[in-house]
Length: 337
Image 1 (cartoon, rainbow, N blue to C red):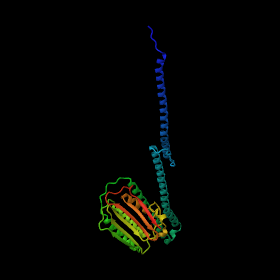
Image 2 (image 1 turned 60 degrees about the vertical axis):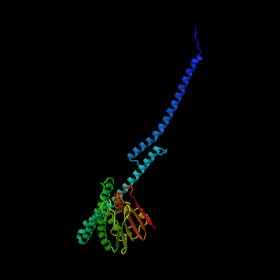
Image 3 (image 1 turned 45 degrees about the vertical axis):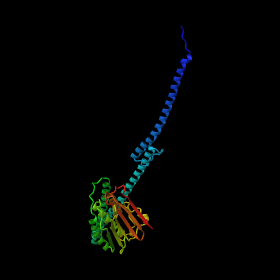
Image 4 (image 1 turned 90 degrees about the vertical axis):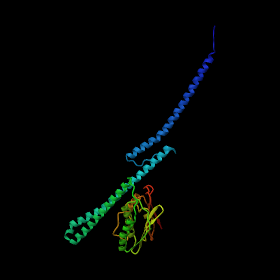
């Protein structure tokens, strides 16, 4: 008996299987190619970030990475660029601070050196001249001491801002205000000025360091006396708000032009000496920087409004309950023509 089957019936399933294998292989190749392209697109920006980070670590701060997409990688690149820009700004501020500090330190040192040389050369034979040179050397030494103390205070304030302090017990600020008023009333009177004080009958307790609030007010009132002509008025007002306490220090002095007002909180920035009623007594431009740092450290806000020829007002606000964080506090300056 003989059985037979057409060869086509045997080859057909084989052809179908081979075609399926070929299609599957082609799809696999396409998928691999797509994954390879996607991997290259994923790896390229990451490698760019890595190279830029290594370059910044090596000292090249002008690095920027392209933001080629709006996804998470694009957001990461934008954040990296912002961080690099902030780093450049911070380092530039540090360089400027060092340059300004060096200049301020060099000036009294140069004056001391010149007078000591003159004293050694010819001053010893002239008691009157020697006394004058020694008095000037002593004055410059005091100036150096004040500058060093101010720089240390500013450094200590900045380092303490990064430390989480223990919660403060709310205090009554009225004794602090009374001590400030007693001190500055005599000083204003000796300068031919009138200090007017207006205190709210009931003030909320504040979570602040009393010695720092005292330093803030003494600095602001001293500036008001410095830049107010004789016969003028200086105002200190303290008012209670629903959730905060507001302090204002105002004067009827010469006011602050806008170009100056924008920089009064900058370190080592000094206003025109000609505006001061005490032309022989000028600081180093760190007083308001320290005031701002103290206000922020106590969770407050500080702002300035000024009108040329009419006067200047500093407004401070401190929360009556939990203090604000330093990020939430701010400083503003508004100058009116």
